[in-house]
Length: 90
Image (cartoon, rainbow, N blue to C red):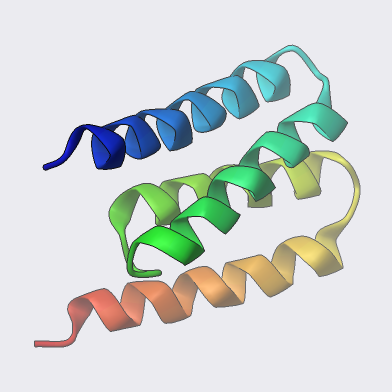
């Protein structure tokens, strides 16, 4: 793996960690921003069924639910189900 690819993966991991920290501290707006940015980087870099992308998506769903946005959370839950189904295909 090249250094630039590793740096990119590290950046995505850091964004996820920041999102989690913000969510735990109750800063849902910033948590959402971090998770959405991390997800956008996954979309451009890796397959959408990447396990880390799925975890990030689960965290975003939690944020949206905590923020009282169940309809939006449900849309992402559906996306998560599709990703999970893709992972299970041979």
